[in-house]
Length: 313
Image (cartoon, rainbow, N blue to C red; front, side):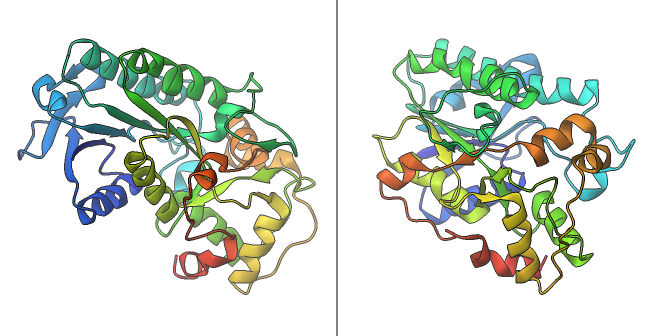
């Protein structure tokens, strides 16, 4: 089976391409430059350009590309580092997804022999803040926040046009992705090393998380299961309140858990007001209902099973 992957050079993309190759899939990487070999496919979403012939030769597309929502490293959170949510950065986040969706829609509508499977990266931010309510794929949206708008309008909504053509479309709604080498893990590790782990506010907001290994496996699981379509929560079965999330990481690293709560305003000021609000203070208690019903087996069901990722970061 020929699989085209966008965002193949990213943190998740590199691991996904490796896993696909090991599973005997034929992997083609979408690139925004002149292709260097036959396993690369040219595309440029900002100009709605794509190699139509190579696109039509694919059996499936796994779409991971998009401007990073969080900075690529911890230094990007610093003022003037370019990683905070300026008006310009928010525009790039939105339009990188919108243009990519429109480019694929155009490619599908211009073709009769198109890929029959389209799997896109997405985020559980689409649900909005839900407090302590359990969130499944059937949960309605609480609208009003920027990330919720981006996921619904630019990432997922446009794909209805592809679905109308008989394509099996899957939206993999990930939580906080954890794994050695990515910014989320670096942040939680640094905070623990400094013995600053503790609750943000009351710490009762839920963090839905997933290991990068399980996320990659979930993509391949969705690819191989023809009865999976639509939204899929790609999160570990055990979402945690932020205070417990921080406590487990501190214990895993043999560091102190700082009991006095951190005022939410410090979180907002530290990483930017809107970014801090939506990444650190929102509560989304997502459960991977579809994956569990279909028999998907998680490698990391609880946070303490990721000890090596935090200790060796």
